[in-house]
Image (cartoon, rainbow, N blue to C red; front, top):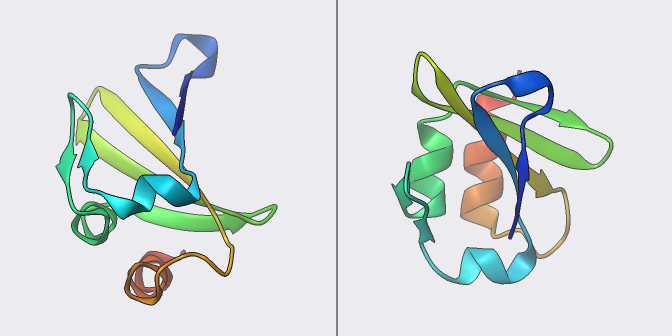
Length: 87
């Protein structure tokens, strides 16, 4: 997992998800839990350049963008949840 700062001083950060990250629940200070449950609480998802961009709002001032590669190793249940939120 790589965590990047948001550009232009926006509040939040970007998380680039890697295959091994999905082997265990997510444990960030702002959000914890199973990946399927977290994606279910996302505001929306777009697919761009082979990456799913999932926007998670912790409150009205802080956002986390999960960038998840559209790869064969993506678990089917998580892929289905992502497609349910695809805009």
